[in-house]
Image (cartoon, rainbow, N blue to C red; front, side, top):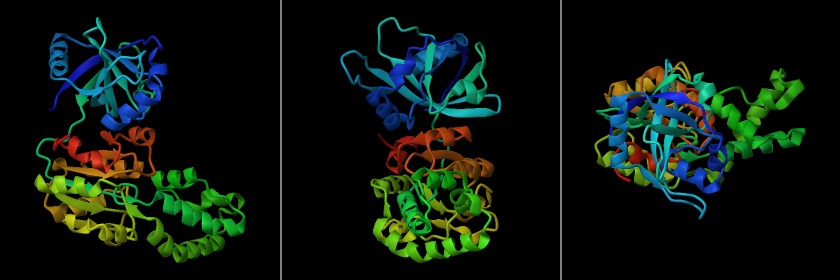
Length: 352
């Protein structure tokens, strides 16, 4: 259900920081809203009578229930939302404690980032809080592959480590994730003083290509729940597509799992002149699907995916299974976060 209301930023008491740090609280918000909470909440007061009436109607219909994880805590309800101030927006979730006397005009927002800093909010600032639901008339969902449908980030780390180790370099997993999230050249980050040695980098890339097929075959698999989620989307009449910046190297995992046949259009690096975050690939994919951008969503795991989605006019959805995290995706304007692709039917109003 689509709704929105305005709120005014109020000072907090500082008590929510400990609450959002509790393991069961963190897990609950990841499950229900894809939010790995930043410490603390943003406190709002509902702005006016019309907004107060809207909020009471939303509360009366109820949100997802977050059961108390210990005897000292209370149950809560949550609603995934988008918070907007001017041209900036961020994903969040309303956290409503089930306690007697809780102020009816108060909203507490949990987000993967500090909303005050990201949205540049001072006390008294007006923000819009809207349900983080798919656009009306949704007709298509386009997917990134690596880190979204296919669990391949660990394999990228493994191949980079094997290639770098004989030369005395250590590759940390976060290095791989950061490079993939922002789509920046990988080897110059690793090599330090030899970052400008183009011949050495060419040697490493050649070794990577040679090692990749065996590592891919042994370590890359589709995420659990992907098939069931795709089936629900297809059964609902949605057209499905793929838009990836890769050459399709990990498509073998999709084919092995019998998932490739779900997709009506596939666009890879071989089909475009400009890589993501340029919108060319998504525009081409939607043209093949015969769907306008305003009626489509793009599901990806990186900041590059979100930027491409926004540039092409699709509704950007971020999954937490790949290279990006909630904070990096929020910083570039993702509209909805989810734990994994298995959660997508609920996001698109198709059950759960």
